[in-house]
Length: 126
Image 1 (cartoon, one colour):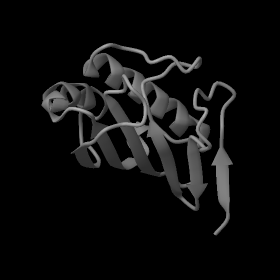
Image 2: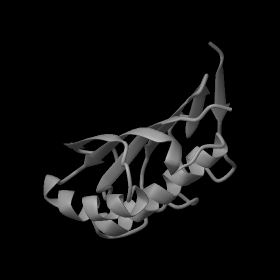
Image 3: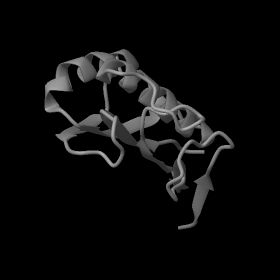
């Protein structure tokens, strides 16, 4: 099955990855972190950072003509599991009804200052 790779001109990552990859009707969104187009971390708490991460996820989904309505699986990575409730409140605002399957884990992240990272899988037939 051929892959379709999506990148955007404002990609803030210096890491070799594609923000979105389509394989058939499935769209995979690489882990998104709370950075702006200049690579600067946005937000000083998990709620602020989570909103930026969802903004970045939405942009990556849009590259593949997908949206939050198409998301079937989400993985959330938190540097501090004590931030679970605050992250959950933000999460609910993006998936208020019929949320996708989700896994949330506590783990160190690759860059100092990151409190959250999220990756997604969407089912979005062309």
